[in-house]
Image 1 (cartoon, rainbow, N blue to C red):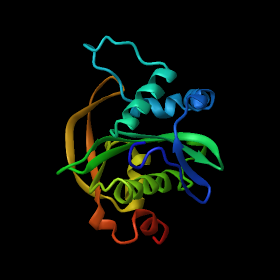
Image 2 (image 1 turned 45 degrees about the vertical axis):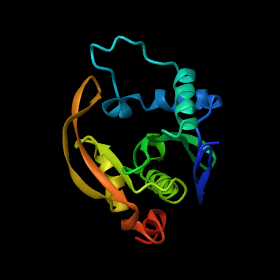
Image 3 (image 1 turned 60 degrees about the horizontal axis):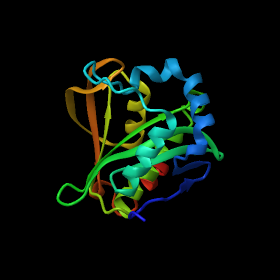
Image 4 (image 1 turned 180 degrees about the vertical axis):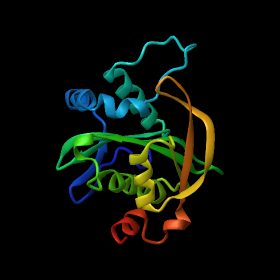
Length: 197
């Protein structure tokens, strides 16, 4: 077992648990209903990358392999135990970096209820407390108002603009970087800070 994985985390009605192959029908249904809402923020492959997009099963297999290697934590976001989105802690680095990044998406039907900030806070606290990481980054397209509200609600620190940082929605897109370090939320964690705002 990799340190800190597999794990399930919960705060009231919001949960994080390992993404499973059996989530395939719920994942596809939520993605289908939210296609227009999520497409502008979805990663894409540059033109020179001719590899076909992975199937759901291939994606989950790859994420599980990376989780076993300690490089990522692929979570399903649940609300009242129902699948509503995905949160991945990725690019986990130990040693002198002790950092990772977080990406997420959620069903528009339940957006605005504090689910995503709670899920992010749960993941951040797990990374700091169980994995011993020091720094978490969230990179967001400047036009993504919903994701910007998440980092604003959590009080994450703006660190700067990364021009043409990731290939999203068919082109290299600028992103803004928000950061939190373990010291910034010590001793009680990000979830405690979020719940006490």
